[in-house]
Image (cartoon, rainbow, N blue to C red; front, side, top):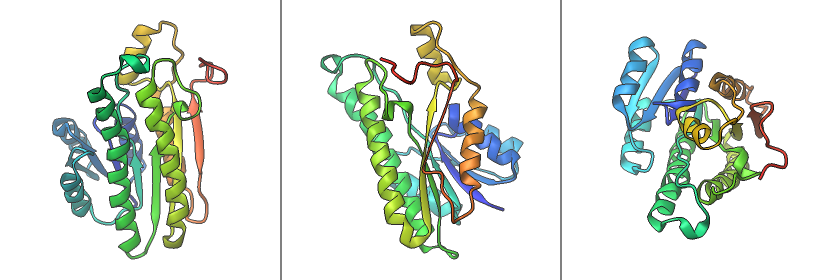
Length: 233
């Protein structure tokens, strides 16, 4: 049975992706802070492994990875949008929180996955980072989120390069306007926002994960067809 760990698995894209992988017969490690939601998913699927942890806590994350064992894929998904506003309106504490989760948490998860994949037998695996259309075309008033997502692209490229010697592939999925709890806030502030079913994002992650070892989806963009991605702003 193939195995995947998913961060941010208690809601949104992470939760939907966990369900898709569990239905496909994968062993799925569920990482998030809300243990009750992970347990509820584990009650429905025998191959779901709840691993309550905060992605910004190195010790907690290390314990989760050690408990899970052999790892074929990491879906590095956990993140937050942070406050909306121009840069002069952003409190430094809010900036630091978004950096800590979106970059620090993603770094910690990638580091632990890379270490596991490098030392396991057979060696290798795949890391899929959740980027964003904001890594290319920002929304207005999104300086914290957009900065982190540009950094995720740099992380993806570096992991792709450094992982070659160990059979570790890394790709990035950039998702636009999937229907999640996070997007509900955007729809409230921006009526008429075009969206797509979150399962379209989840099945795209499954496609990337099921590529054979000699192939890699380096970057994939999946989005609501009519959202203003090209030339938005």
